[in-house]
Amino acid sequence: MKNILKTCTLGAIALGFAAQASATEWNASVWGKRRAFTEHVEKLAELVSEKTNGEFTINIGYGTLSKNTENLDGISIGAFEMAQFCAGYHADKNPTLTVLELPFLGVSTLDEEVAVSNAVYNHPATKADLARWNATVLMPTPMPQYNIVGTGAPRDTLEKFDGMRVRATGGLGKAFAAVGAVPTSVTATEAYNAIESGVVDTVSFAQHAHQAFRTIDIADWWTSNLNPGTVNCPVVVNTDAYQALSDAEREALDSSVAEALDHYIDNYTTNVLATWDKFLEEQGKTVVEIPQSEIAKFREVAASPIRDDWIKTMEAQGIPGQELYDLVQSTLSEN
Image 1 (cartoon, one colour):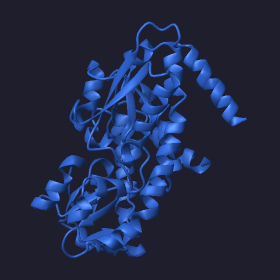
Image 2 (cartoon, rainbow, N blue to C red):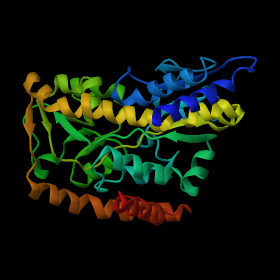
Image 3 (tube, one colour):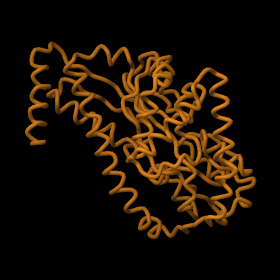
């Protein structure tokens, strides 16, 4: 029955393009190279083209359209119609999203990350926040909890974090700073050079990024269970471009999001998470397991104080920080 319904839906969407005079072409700005982090964007483009018989296409530019830290700016002026960005790159531009980058939120799975992200994206405050940039969120980029790689002796206690120069952005950077580390917010594409040149001692990433940006290549070790949090990197569209789509085009785009995310999660689980331990073994990397007592101390120092400070700062700006944080927690309790 699902296949029959899908076929009927595809047929109905395609019929909407029969009388369309000209094709619609969008550009999507991402960075790096094709990897697990961009698989939902790739799948979305594939599905949209398929559903519209090639009359609506999305061209994905890997670093060719904008710097990753300027993608939201590009969206705001219509330089391209779609883009991916990370909230921690410019917290002042998207303060509501930074609730999702607070340390030790309690998110454990990619599905939970999708759920809390969508809940925050659909909050009126977040919509108004991104509307300042003429941006509408299309879908999240769910990532697992970050862990760090480093050179030299493993950093397996909070005492050893003191003075550690770590590539970490947003709430993760604040968490490391709370235990004496020195966070540096270099972009993902700059991380390899930063650790190679000694600008940082360690780099905080999800697994796919350690592979894609080769930080694991130069590292000696990886922490397997620190799990302080993650970053939030939505895919957004230029609101004017989205509203200018025909009904059939918009249906083709919107109806492809769920399948694109399913593809992303399946790919990440199968090709990254399930093979990570074997990859580390083949690379000869030391797996560092942080004692639970140290993680508990990290949580005590970083979780509540940083959360309370974030809420206070947001409320002072007229942003419902407490409400957004409570929304994350209530969503987690339901999933």
